Image (tube, rainbow, N blue to C red; front, side, top):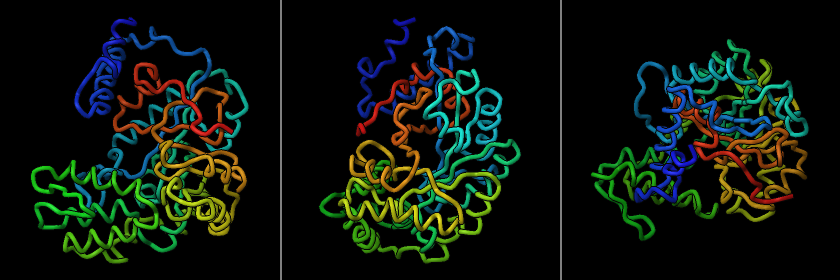
Length: 363
């Protein structure tokens, strides 16, 4: 079996841009093992595992297609999401916020081997209108991470605005800050590259970049009503809280924390907890780092999360945890586009390469 798994390791594959091709082949192997019932033969740790799923947006079951904004934040369609949640409920022990807090200090909570949790980032309206009814029907209490200023100002994130401008331009190519992007034959990779470039820009340049991109594309930034329609309201967020779901902070503005000085990070992390608690009328104990990769936050971020009074914090696309959770201020989460991807990550984490997480910034 080790020989079969070996051919799917990154060092044995060379597909140019690498990671997506490797992930795809790992999923193919996992599907094969599950289809023949061999997933139980792949050794799992005796220790209980915890897969935390994260979503941003969902396509409606009818009319699935391109959005006016960033298609990249749509994780799956609502029908697939419903199947994922039903499987999660049947095959794992689904934890709510209190359960996750207990998992930071407990071993196998009830003798089960696979635990799970469900989270949502960014406060999109899909989470309320599409996901909430399914979660409530199944009795799954999720965590919703809210970027305070986006909800308060009714303004979308820079990624959505950038995608909107690029989709609407009639130009075949653009040059921005000395970089040229081909929007004709290579629109999808050009959009992906521009969004990647934006993510690691210093925060004081991001807003200016959007205005320059608007001028370059010859497309106006979308109006307030168009942006507001994509986001939940404070009333809807409070309704989620009142129906048993947890509300956590996703910072004030969703800016990448690693690009900010300590004082600004303090405002983003500590200030967002204060304002969010006032908005929802309840204590806020969970935080999710914006974007969420190890390069997107730093030691200052982790220290401020502790100082602010949060009890746990989450990263993104960083793996699967063991129980008890090793570091409750850097708890990994994963995405899953399909039901088979969800099953593979839960049942075959070794094959999927997501076993064994570490703290990027040890306490």
